[in-house]
Amino acid sequence: MCCFSQPVISVSATNIFARAEGNGRQLVVYSMAIEARTELAMILPLPVHRPAGDQDVTFVNLKGYPQFFADLERGFVPPPSKGGHSLNLLAAPAAAALAPLPVVAVGDFEASFVPSTQDFSRLDERFLIADHLWAQLPGYGDFGFAVFKLKAGAMRVHPMAFSFPRRDPRTVFFPTVHIHDGEVHARAEFDHTLYCQPQADEPLLTRAWEESYAHPASFMQVGRTHGIILPDQHCFKKGLHGQLPNRDTYLRVVV
Image (cartoon, rainbow, N blue to C red; front, top):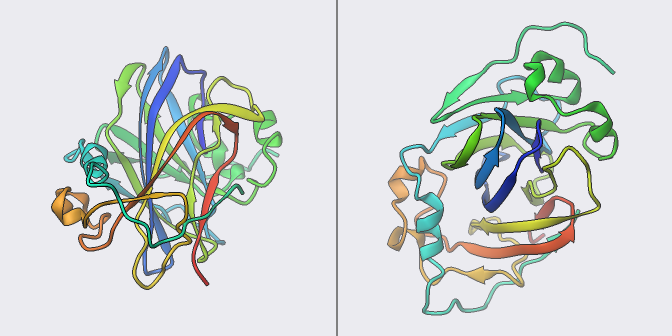
């Protein structure tokens, strides 16, 4: 889910990379172009393993690799990808006063992890989502939230990356449902490209996604990804564009 604490003028060219880690965690890399009149927060709800604490999300600084997604896209330039895999997408009260949540400098952003909806009171009020909006999104009451504080103006934000303890080891999660104008809509305008990288010991159901023509070692600067990209496993890509149901995306693991 990509939610903004204030209305935005525009959001476009959203790229999301997701990969399971072998330690019960999941990696997410997120980038977009945004224009806003005021400073605001981007809030990404996460299906975290419970119980969750303030330090359970680890943020990764990719400011030194702003072309992460441009290089990743190079892996899908002809020659055409070949089949052999199958992929399946499934759509799937005020808190007491507590200590402020830790804030981490991550490149051009300040980032925090909010363990639950009750913990939002520990954030600056400028970066909150109205309670009535959460009420329109059932199913997120036990999620955690990665929060990135953004400046006003038009910008192409460098990739924002983090790792979280995933709740369901059978799925890889993409935060794709969104609130851009202070309202929750059943359908929304998507301009998203999703990327994933299945591991050899945790294959994904891979139908309807495009496969990279080679290993990332041939088209990415793998050493600059801080271990996010595996050098010797193919990547996959799928576009979400136009008016679509406004929901998150889950990719299931072969069982």
